[in-house]
Length: 169
Image 1 (cartoon, rainbow, N blue to C red):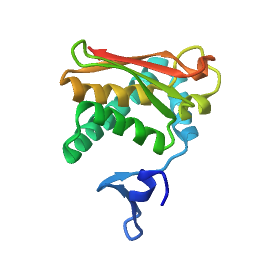
Image 2 (cartoon, rainbow, N blue to C red):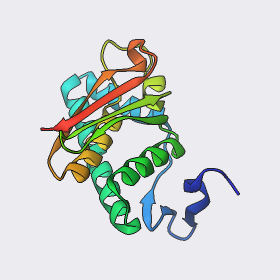
Image 3 (cartoon, rainbow, N blue to C red):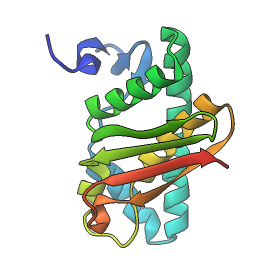
Image 4 (tube, one colour):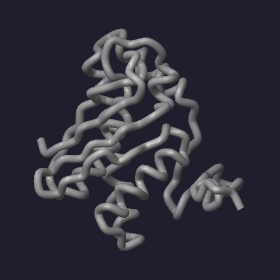
């Protein structure tokens, strides 16, 4: 048995070319593909690249957190842990909960070895917009309020890890 629960539960349908995890379709894609897309958009507008990746991540994070929370009847903390484990198991990096405060609507997560920061290379600002979006979508489910995060540290900027602060908009 593999220690990676995602890999153990992936189902491949060769007739349709589909890969599913718990009846939800996923694709395997290199981080360099995402970063290549990001850098191409950045040539026109850094803000557009940041917003597009954030929104894509937000949608996926929101839908996943909502679905898995309901499907498995998870508490908020269990949902956070599930999503962080899933993030690591799909190769995005190692996620670590720093703070979760339901009352003040704050969530803080550290990501070591972000696949996106490593693929991006040197940068002057945070580049892990997809992760920021996913975590913001997760927080929106937990806090039942629209949330938005910021990446205050990023491996691509020379920091030792990426750090995300998510709170109510």
